[in-house]
Image (cartoon, rainbow, N blue to C red; front, side, top):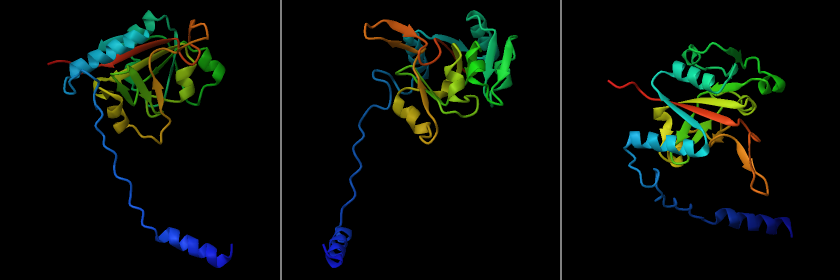
Amino acid sequence: MTAAAREEILRRIRAAAVPPAPEPPRHYLRHAPGTDPDDRPGTLALFAERLAEYGARVLRATDPGPAVARALHDEGARSLVVPDGLPADWTADWDGEVRADRPPLGTAELDATDAVLTGCAAAVADSGTLVLDGGPAQGRRAATLLPDLHVCVVRAEQVHSALSGALAVLDPARPLTFVSGPSATADIEMIRVKGVHGPRRLVVVLLEAPSG
């Protein structure tokens, strides 16, 4: 092919007017099926129900400090790793060892720590899912995977009825981790094994505004 022929082909390609693809219709539900998107109590109840189905514990509270201390005490935790940006009042009522992940703790240190306490970026009621993006009070992915117990504080306003609502507030450029219940998997014989990919135990402190 001569250079002139090549340039002619490229010229014709550039000159071809290709209309932009139309926006696809988006008629899917933006809330969990069978729910009222304006029913906040119902959304929170569904979130707690889905978590319980996975084997996670849910503590509904208006004050995070006592609820976090209760969760850690009930699960027998004695040491706790906390990420940067975690509110001080979340651990104010707990008298166990607190290990700040700054500078970053080593793998052996994290593995030897009983629990990790974090917040989240968003949550999904329909699937009982927590989403962490490494932001303040969430920390590194390694710190949320190695301890045996994960206690996560979720504010009621962070709970979205369906995944589409959560995706609308998440930054896709951040390292998103989706957590649906305690870590578990099954082998070829369908024998369930906990803790293979992360914490065996998950406790969610669902933080609601005090009434009145």
